[in-house]
Amino acid sequence: MRLKSLVTVGLAVVLGLAFSTATAPAASAAGPRPNFQMPFPCGQTWSGNSSASSAHQSYEIDFNRGSTADADYGDTVVAAAAGTVVISAHQGSTNGFGNLIKIDHGGGWFTYYAHLSLRSVSEGAHVTLGQKIGEVGNTSKPGNNISPHLHYEVRTSDTSYPANIQKAVFNGVTFGYPAQTVTSQNCGGASTNPYTPQEVCGSGYSVIDSAALGTAGTVYLLYNSGNGYNCVATMKKTSLGTPTATTAYLEVQGKSRVTDSGNFGYYAGPVRASAADTCVKWGGKAGSNTYDSPFEHCG
Image (cartoon, rainbow, N blue to C red; front, side, top):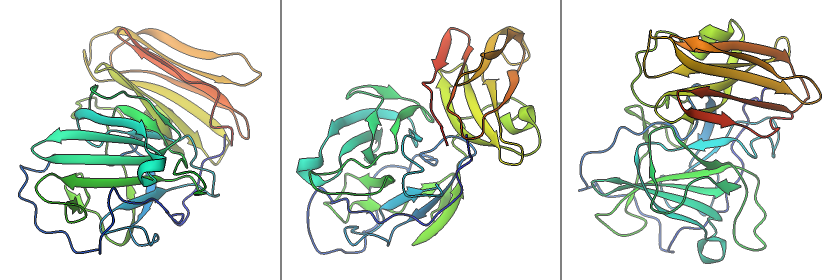
C-alpha cells in the first residue's frame, strides 16, 4: 500500500439540480449552522477546489488527494454532520451527480455528496458525524467521463438554487475559496480518549482510512511512507479507562493475519505489517460493533 500524495483537483463536470445564471449566494435565513466537519475520515488531508469546473454555480467543492487521476477511487466518504439521509440514489441521467447522498441536518441545512462509486446508506437512515456513507468515484450521466473525485455542497432550504448553495465551513473555519488543502477533524464527535491513532502507531504514520464502530469506537488504517508499513489501531470512544473487548487486525494479501485482541482501556493495536504495493484487509471491533474491509488500498 502506497500513501497517496496530494494533487490538484480534477476537473469536475457535475451539473446542478437546475440551470441558471450563477449568482452570489444570499445570506441564509436557515437555522443555526451545524458544526460541519470535512467529509473524510479523521486526519486525512484533501485538496479542494471550487473554480476548476465550468459547471459549478458558486460554492461547490471538488476534492482530491491522490497522486494520479484514479488514486482516490474507493476512498471513504463520511457524513459531515449527523442527520437523516433524504436521497440515496444514482441520479446521473437527471443531473450528472451519479451516485448521490443528500443528508438533512435539520434547521434547513443539507449536504450533498456526488459521484460516489458506491452508497453505504439508504434513504431514511439516520447517520452520525463521521459515519461512512459511501466511497469516492466517478459516476455521472451517461457519456460523461470524469476523473474520480468527491463533489461536495452545503445548501439551505430558504431560497432557490443556486442562491441556496452556502460557503462550506469545516470545524468552524470557512473554506479558503477558491482552493485550499484541509486536514479533516471529523473524528466522530467529541472524544476524551487521550490517545490518537498516530500516537499508537508511532512516528511517521498517517491516517489513510477509517471506519466507525457504532458509537463504541473507530478503527483506523495508517501508512508510513518511509518504511512501507501499514498500521491498524482501534480507538475506543466509550468505557474509556475500563478494560473492554477491543480488537485490531491487519492482513496483507498472501500473508497471515496479524491481530491484537483483548480487554483494553483505550485502544487495540498497534498492528503493523509491510505492505508496499500490496492489497490489505483491515478491521477491528469495539464492544459489539465490528468492521471488516475487503482487500483494498492496493497501491
